[in-house]
Length: 464
Image (cartoon, rainbow, N blue to C red; front, side):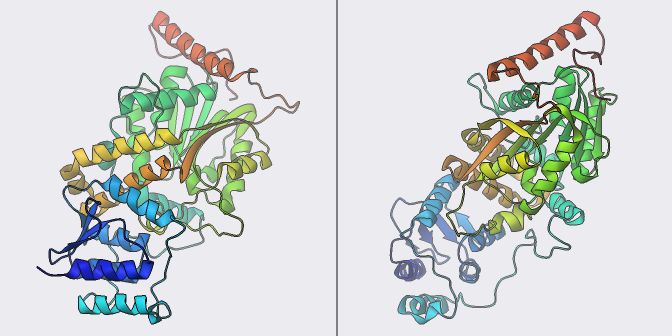
């Protein structure tokens, strides 16, 4: 049996000055690394070449997405990701760059010699075709944002049905103790948003980045609102319109293919933005916040549901994840929750409530990964093996990141105060949550008693 794995692991460990956290199986069948550790399989020399040309996250992602790197059949993907993350975050682990200067030392020369001996030195392999490489226009211009959104969301509605389940909700679920399934938890999340917004029959709701329409459908059915949902994903809009028509709610819900910066017809009584602000970009965030402020009527509420990163040490520059940026969310940016709150306040909002749901998102992502793995042949048939691998890796890695507190998710409730400074909220959190729930039950009772479609009348008139 060959010795490729032993040679490779030995050279890497000499360069890093410590043991690697994974067991490696090379293309010649040899193995090296800690016994009992999660095992990765380098299927060919090209896998090693990808790692040499792009050491770290991007090289690993390219090798996995292309199939040049696999996991051993008895290896759990979450264990691999947890081990790699812990190793990468360890401050004692050096972070060498593989370049001419770095290869001048003895450890670097040994790694290069080993790679030459294994036949792994050669031209940089072409990235998998799923990688975004050429981008046109200024970052977060409307044209470039449309291209970025299309890359992520226009991969096929049938694929998203497999992953997300019947709810078609692509954001963090809310795992109440009574939740027995992902569908239960997603329904609870939609209802939580409606209650935080204080929805009442007859109100006018704007959902920015409405996805496949699940929130506006829930709000119209259970709270009697009129709703506008906007998205710049053509496939999302097409299916959302179909779902609205099938629900018999086309007279109460309008779905638009429209950028949030193009919405002309405010004011609205309430605005929701769920999983959309991550696409805005830090340079445009104040524009985003001010525009939503202008779209709200005085006394109206905004619910901003957004992923957050940890604050950086002083002087450290924020860098986008190369894997997420090139394969998943092009141009996506995360900000600390404190920055989000500050920008909303700068735009004129009064922030009234912040709820962290970090653990909820880790569980949600694991459910999505399980759905994907349970329908793997169908997923591959719909989008191809490489893209299915992208989604599996991104969702599993994100679950680990939430669980280890590298990223978080927060619902920020803000209001546009009246000219007199009033917020319109009851004095305590339980009161404003219970008040909206009571209005929803009144709406349902009224519908049952009348034996007819939802009424437009309510205890608060629409701003239209």
